[in-house]
Image (cartoon, rainbow, N blue to C red; front, top):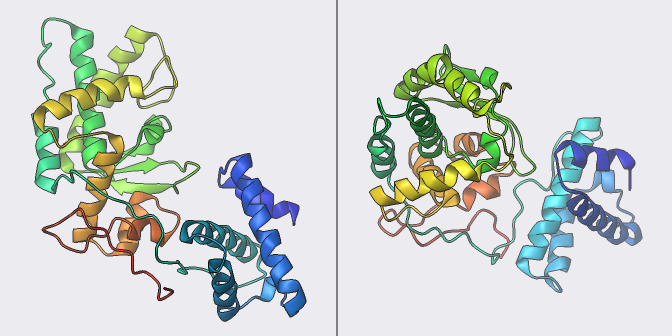
Amino acid sequence: MEQDYKIHMQRLRHSPKTIKCYTKYIEKLEQWCRPKRIELNKIKYQEILQYVAMLKTTNAPDSVNNQLTAIRHYMNHLIEKGVVADNVAEGIKVRGSTRKVLQNILSSDELEDLYYSFETNEHKKTNFYFEAASKRNKVIVGLLVYQGLLSNNFLRINIEDVDLSRGTIYIASTRRNAARKIPLKPWQIMLLKEYLEETLPIIQKHIGVYNNRLFPLKTSQFNVLLHPIFKKLKSYNQKVTNNNGIRGSVIVNWLRKYNIREVQELAGHRHICSTEAYKQDDIENLQNVIDNFHPLS
């Protein structure tokens, strides 16, 4: 196995355990190719399908799809090197894998109600820091219900990632998700402007942390902010569960408005099948999830 493939995986922020596992999967594919005199760098789509058919005889669908993910990464690595032009494994997915069961999906109106219901003036004239913290929390709520961010996204947002003139926010890549720029709502831009100019300096001075983070903290655990926020949001709507629940609702609502490739980019999904998992087979019954991306049965 080439060392630069492992370096490619490290750049994508995969854990050492994942890199070891994916490397093993590629070695397994190489072993299958060898007696058939197939060069891995020249493997064709139909040959990938033959390999998948072989895997299905002894592996569960989830295991096969994990191995396909490793193969897609390897093909992307070859594309980067200029060895191949296309990823022959892109889009191949085995049916029957564990489906994403989405419960308590909030509509776009319900998500927006959470934002407008979130009070910021309850501490006004009683404690200047608590008032500033409430305004910071409302900024966070906006990024939850409109951009579908997760805890590890918030930790990576720097001040310069907010572009008020273009109305966007840049979300850095994580081990699981790709980097992307997401549009902000006009009312978010107004609140962010006030936050950057007035609220953030108060918070920085109070906690004694002067760094470039949009949400400075003395800890690396962003849940210390999210936990009380979600407790408050649940008092407004009992369908609110956790960070993943809000994000799932945002993605489901995006899929009603945009095509799947646009949603993939907004959500930061590295693979289209991750976005596909959020598609619903019946608008009136959002609990049933479809999985019909590829003709393999």
